[in-house]
Length: 232
Image (cartoon, rainbow, N blue to C red; front, side, top):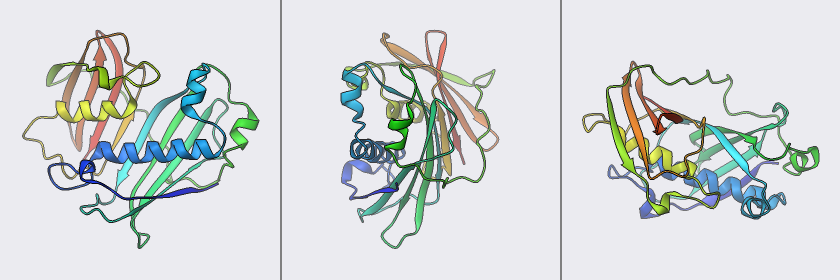
């Protein structure tokens, strides 16, 4: 089942360059996916209260163009039917009202507490289509970094599952980029979550430049929790 919504951006969705913010893109997609889950009878918050939770492990985002106006956007999401056992691939697209593609993305989710039963999976009415023709290479943390920053966590960074919410990591990574880096024209980004951040008051952000972008890795003490790669 292809689930679609119309989203009307507000002023809080735009960054200082007047473009739809990177973290706003993730919030839009995440909320659309949540309502898709609701429509499929799989309420995420209700499931968490019952001790069943999804764990987001990977975002892959390709940006064709970031909107610079509050014109309505068409957001589509669906669950792919060829995922390995124990995993679900969710794909998305964002288009303008003319149908021009602006963003495409998939995330990879894997269960933490229970196996994904076939009835639950079938409730999403999976589709065969995927937004990317290839498989993303495995993302690994660099061995050496140029800078590091200690960032205090706030209570508002913690979500209903008791750990830092997945969209916050992108905001943290953007804070770690040097002032000299042009951040308004990334072609895309990858985020991998080896481990959730919880039960800590600070995290350490480590940055290094890459040939075609930048890496920011987030650590809790000495534990690698998140790898973010920005593509220029």
